Length: 471
Ligand code: FCB
Image (cartoon, rainbow, N blue to C red; front, side, top):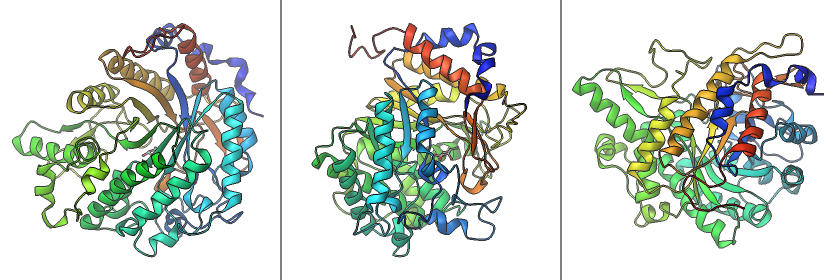
């Protein structure tokens, strides 16, 4: 089914430079691919799954660029046998996926849906049988719609609902998951979902957005307590989207704006999680829009983290009058309009290391959308290979600079439903024909397979942090 392009294996594009980069990583480094439930599963109305806020958002005229939804997506729900085989065929030792809360608890409270849990049981067991570690995320944005109807993440009660869900997942999967992350990218849920309104649930209020960000962080803390209360064996963490913020000019106004944007995107989350406080300058900027914080909340948020997931795609350019989103810099961009800026990954990781007492880091997402074309059974996605190679090299620079990076996950395994962009953006290592659901390995998949096998075979045994010499 999938090996159509295997004859011209990645050799053509896997050069000596890639081999030299692979050798800079310890052999026990975690190499993976990532997806999320709503973007690939489909089967949105089957086997008792409840609606999520994304099902609802997709029904709004104009919300999704191509008018599509995740109703069918990659039909992964019906194809897990094939897809687990596909993951294993890449030679990765890790797969990051999310569980759809409304699939396992349709109303976000009360009854569990056994058919939903069965699906994730088959997925997790299938991965383990093939030696692939299941890295589970509890919330990759698809909140049960029933909870949205009573305020969603704006309602403090959702925090308790989320902790119940986390505890149930720990009971069932805690000993099989390789890691468990609470949330994926709380900034996106808060800001794009509640301030910009471009993502579900589509609200436009800074005050709501900041209250949501606080409830997400609080629910992370309470969920970690609940997971640990279940004696969950898996290392626990959270996934943040981050990139360095650079000012567009050196004017004092632009520098000040860049500092504030750094506060809103990085320090807001990192200070809360690792120091138990919100940054003063951001609180002052927010004024009346600052969230209501109850006594004890900040200590709850600051739970010990076993790992921190960082999703890195690009840097942010900031200045007075510069809108949120990609800014023209004259440099190469991907099909998302995101600047290709690998040095930003090194800069970000070294800066986080300097400013905080970091737990081990997983780069939980990195990758690029390009206008891939399937021609004669092959997708020659040279740009994606260059993107991946340069970013993995940038990660090696951070590792050698002393950052305890232990894992890397390409976004994404498959082309999939890219949120408000629908199916118009292709991020996969594997090309998906949405009419036939045929999967075809792109050249980048063949490249990554060769890269992972080289990294496992030739790197040093010892972690850069020196915490374990293997036989
Ligand atoms: C991240 C999301 C992921 C995907 C990539 C391109 O922000 O976590 O679901 O959409 O961007």
